[in-house]
Image (tube, rainbow, N blue to C red):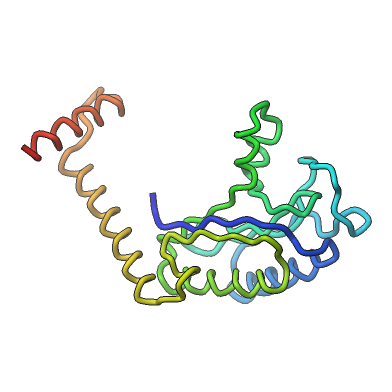
Length: 195
């Protein structure tokens, strides 16, 4: 739970990868963010027409109070989530393998200013490096550039989190109660309050 962005797309050209890595690394270094570089050059500086899960190309970085943000790709140039590649690459189910291409980042705890910065950074990189790039931003800032909407969405999510924590404090899990029993008891209590 928490305000997040979801994104995906393709690298425009295989030979753009080192420049993309360089720019992201420079920003991470300026802000002293931890980063990880995967493979830096595609074989023969070209995308592979066959999908291979053996190697990941690109860079990831982790700002404070934020999940890791990845600009990482398979050999076919398609953006992926590295941890999901590890989990789902050898899955027999096609639906599960599609999770590899779902990249998301929770920015809730990093705050409004950081979220705004990251959205602008994505827009900058999208113009230079990506094709078929899509982003879904739960704050709607990517779509609207509206700072007031962004602040309002953060406030809504903060309130939801505060209320959830308050609910756990005022309606705690009982000793030896499993999570399913807790939620059944909680929902029964909520429904009784509605009457």
